[in-house]
Length: 307
Ligand SMILES: Cc1ncc(COP(=O)(O)O)c(C=O)c1O
Figure (cartoon, rainbow, N blue to C red):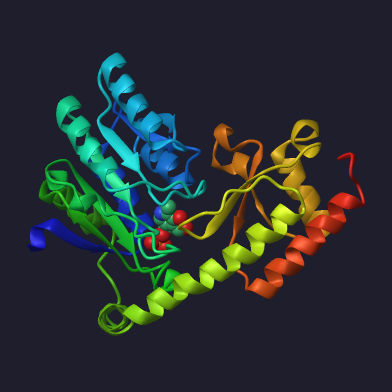
């Protein structure tokens, strides 16, 4: 029904305004750590507080959610989750959301699932939707976007679906801030949703090829990297001796200045990202191989990490 879905000007717009609708002084949100910046700052800009919980191991994450609810007064009002996760590429299976719904009902918190990478998955993995869990609509909403799988980032089209009361709150805030979407973009989005399913699948194959080129190249350099099964990023540990001899920000600057390679320092995603880099799969395979060669040359020239 219409009351359970609303279109947004990209999912980030909807997410931030949903935080304004839900949060206020004294309210706390639990968010993944490391965090995609708006998951933290959407809450802070709405005058809320944040508790950041380690995201890498889904069981540990859920145990920490329960622990936080048991030990915090007043209890957290909101849980923000994001799988496939940016920046760490962590993924989950469907039963994860069954447990999220159970905990939400037990402890009385609301849930926002940021499902930005719903369409970008590899090797047969199908990222599960929060809304497939029984009772999900009682406690939360899910944001999807056409920015990633449909390659329409600049067009600003996303959706929020789920709990009608939360959607009504978002609609009220949006009513003050924006007047909706340019009609040509609405029509383009409808055509894309109706006609381009195979192009979206093909897009994932392109990202998988880039992932393989980057991961195998970094492994050849001796880096400790996991192969992501979804999303648009490789989350790589900074190798020694640089990990213990310089900050992640300085290491990223070194790669930029001496290797001409731009990466995101993990510390840009909070303290839990220190010691990691987020490498984006937004260049073609050839350029990614070139980037690996540049990284290898830059670090070989300077193997002790001395600037
Ligand atoms: C986890 C996550 N959420 C939301 C977004 C923003 O997407 P949109 O373009 O729909 O605002 C991104 C894009 O970088 C993202 O990685």
